[in-house]
Image (cartoon, rainbow, N blue to C red; front, side, top):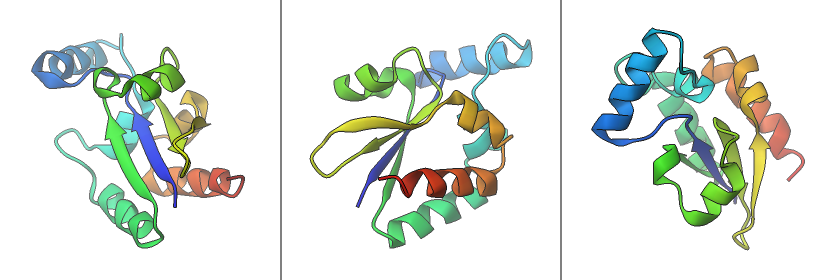
Length: 123
């Protein structure tokens, strides 16, 4: 079992969400992970279905905003968001997908899942 942690290139909370939305509208802020997980209003149905498939295989998927990460997650991701980390059974964290991998998905949950599954083969 692996814990998969997606870290957004955005802060949580009302202020963080507002800053992201405004920044995204003017092209100053981008988060490929946000584009994959969410429609403009809520989490995508395809994302929820993917989470369920991975849960059925024993993998937990967690999403975090930059300012909501643990100290260890922050250390593993800081300055390289958006990204996806993997936490092994012994608590070690490693980056499994970087911003480039997420950009290749072009907002597609299906493409994200294929890339993630190919990366998991190495772990």
